[in-house]
Image (cartoon, rainbow, N blue to C red; front, side):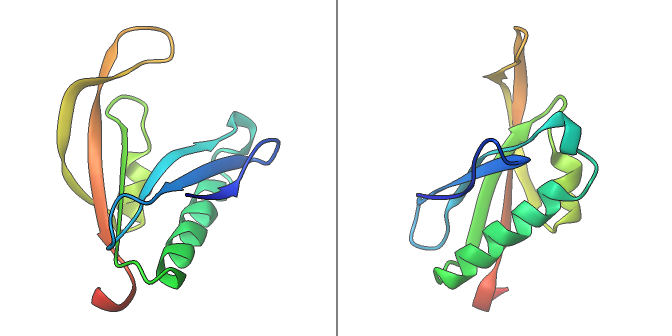
Length: 109
């Protein structure tokens, strides 16, 4: 596991080594005060660069269907693999779906 940043920075992210081809990006979060300023985009690019340095060829991640970051991930070239309905808990109760994304990186693009 590689941690890129952590509190009290504007954001944090964690790599989970899920396979030989690529890690899962887990828990990418940006503080509310830093949203819309390109922080998450820079963090995702840094994560991709780190994965390429680790000779990985695939990134996977998920986000909530409601109020998730699907627009960011699609803008960065991730492909939607599918949705798992009612999989994640919302911060204030209830369930939301989870969208699964993937992206080829490095040599095998």
